[in-house]
Length: 357
Image (cartoon, rainbow, N blue to C red; front, side, top):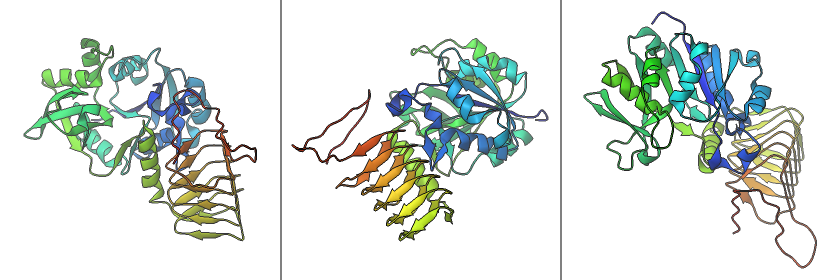
């Protein structure tokens, strides 16, 4: 395939499964190991030599543009493509027709993470003759995904979220297409949920006799659409962290792989890695346990945090129980007061979930 590949990153979507965080923030900008999920995908494209990238955006366009800019800081050139409504992945392809301009392309869902990147797969697609390449991984709950059925190593059928899956091979959120996908996206009709499904468009390619090459991903893959997936992705990325201490340690100890970014202060505290403490954060008389990501400007004082993600400028103070397996939003304060009688007092946004143990 001689033409240069473009990138198409999907970053619309409402992020309903991560509410209330996503009431005020794009789900693709929620950080994993203190870096927005979206940036991992953009960096994977750049590493694969794909630098002309279109980002499909929706209602959170302004926030995503503010974070990514023109892409130059990430070594790419970005064009923003507005999708008026989340009408399906194939609809996003059609929305990007002018940007793609007949070029082959890599489509990457902006809330997905792949441990091993996509460089080898992109090289294989570039050097081959396939009309499409789909990435697959075996999952325990295939009914939650687009599912591929193979016969003799060839893709014969794709079904979106089948109630009774005939395969456990889920479509990973990365696809590679020749320009032939465009005619198939134009030929299909909306599904029962009112969307133009990419699975239907790829099935149309198969029915036209075009070559759709499957590739099973062996390294981990995460769709970070749910809290448990965010925490797991955070854990997986922190697991390959390299120690770096640029902030200030005062009467404190660290154990294992720990990153303390410039401007952070750790005072009379213990940090047990893998963990990352963001720039300008303050950890005082506290314990930060494994698999914790403490973002920029966070304060943790007289408290313990483990296996959690604390977003920018949040505060956790004066707690007598450990915060664990939690995702705490921007500017949130969790603190104990001295008022009597002792009681719980909350101000909680829509779709929140609080567990008291």
